[in-house]
Length: 213
Image 1: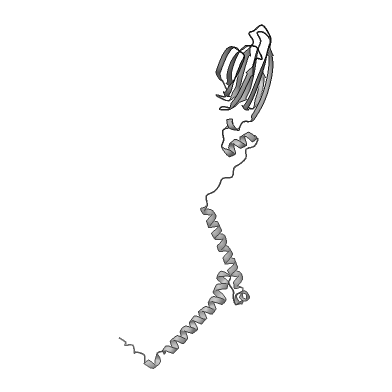
Image 2 (image 1 turned 90 degrees about the vertical axis):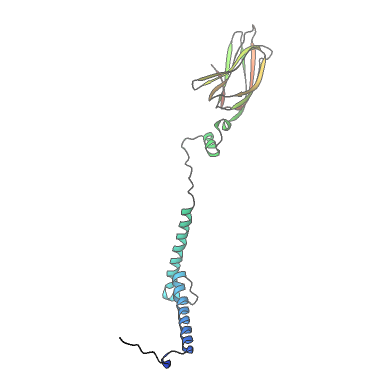
């Protein structure tokens, strides 16, 4: 075995020498940090040495790439939002229904109309409103001094409904609510011996009003 010989006290550095070496190492590290590390990693160049050596440009690229990576990370954590795709040929009514989530009955056009028809003795006439299910329309009709038989009813899509019937009535008014999509309205017949002019006033949610033939 070999026994190592302990160093002599004169061979060991003194405290002053240790402090001096520490200061020199710290100063060298600071110089390296300011002139090389900061410019090349963070594009910070307080001395201008980094620009001269081309290190600042390298740091700018690294900083930009880091910012872009962070933006991509933030986008990836955010929930994706679906972009609505407009349907070709969709009407304004369908657009309103789709965007605001309201029922088609409430989105239907609001309008106001007045129609008159003269019924000879024994003659009948029918006027219908084109309505969607759930839509409502106010109405008032008068036989102008005469009396008629009437039937308030609806039909469409293979469905039929009778809302109200009457005999020998001079006038009527109320609210008509469509039970389904289709034509909803009135049929009158003049059972008197004289002509009767019948006038109908309506306002509400319907797309058209027409006298049925």
